[in-house]
Image 1 (cartoon, rainbow, N blue to C red):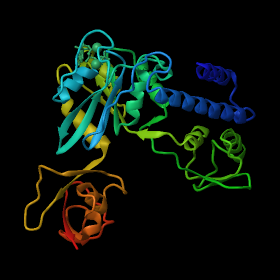
Image 2: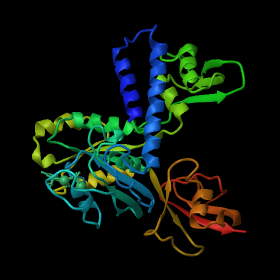
Image 3: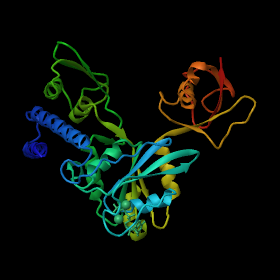
Image 4: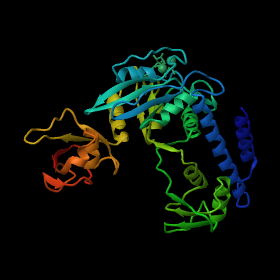
Length: 374
Ligand SMILES: Nc1nc2c(ncn2[C@@H]2O[C@H](COP(=O)(O)OP(=O)(O)OP(=O)(O)O)[C@@H](O)[C@H]2O)c(=O)[nH]1
Ligand SMILES: [K+]
Ligand SMILES: [Mg+2]
């Protein structure tokens, strides 16, 4: 575990280093080195398919099915399997002792015509990303999800939330964040230049700090463009390139076993859904929030002269590249996009219903589409 020791040494040095203008360059270099070591750890664990250090066993082999994938991450015995068994047709073993669930268990939620894959996972503990328990395998599955449910036990200390977040972040997962607005254009000469595209001087980065960080990435020449007031950590994320940006919901379970006063503390927090998996409390709201966070749209196809099948929507991700008419065609059949002449669309994405549109037209939730072929 040489990598782990190096990581620990740098963490200690960072702790000792005072933060001021004179030390910022050094701090940025240390942070870059930490990011690199964490990447090596990640590689070690995926290569061995397992825990590298502790844990052991195979990586979880779960194939992706359905329109989106949702994973449940949390400490042991917070009630993941109880909730999983309530939401899906699959029973996952529930027990009062920790580490009841030992592997990844997939099943489906059918919601608003979409098929959503839900994965029950073993509990993780602090140090999971360094190989304790099945942590790395769990986090590797979490990386592949369209949404992570961070399941918390309302009767346990609130600090658990932060520990789980740190485990996921240490593995390159960024929760409820967009990729930083930074463009790095590598070039052959000219050193590091920094320009900004927002109307204020940058407060976290300057050319000097960018140079220090880029040096760690063996990138002496680059044009860096800041589209927002980004931090050194943001720049490191961009240079690391292996970050995944995943939405997350904090599912506060076992609210049946806590007091109203305690619950009120959570009421104002963003992305929190209080539930009782055991008693089935508030699961409707949880599903609604899952749907909202997944950011999916339903599109109904309509054969000529027939009514659309409202029970069987095509579900698309609501991102510009994934919800066009062309993207819809590709989902229906491999060659349909080439064969399409134009499409008729009914619904909120068009001014007139129906309206004739081309392949680049962006669809909205509950649109009806009729594809006209050549
Ligand atoms: N009071 C209360 N207890 C619950 C609730 N949900 C689960 N439990 C209990 O919590 C214990 C652990 O539940 P599990 O569903 O096995 O928890 P888990 O997170 O899957 O646990 P591991 O697989 O071991 O990580 C069991 O005794 C459950 O009956 C709940 O909403 N309220
Ligand atoms: K358990
Ligand atoms: Mg379980």
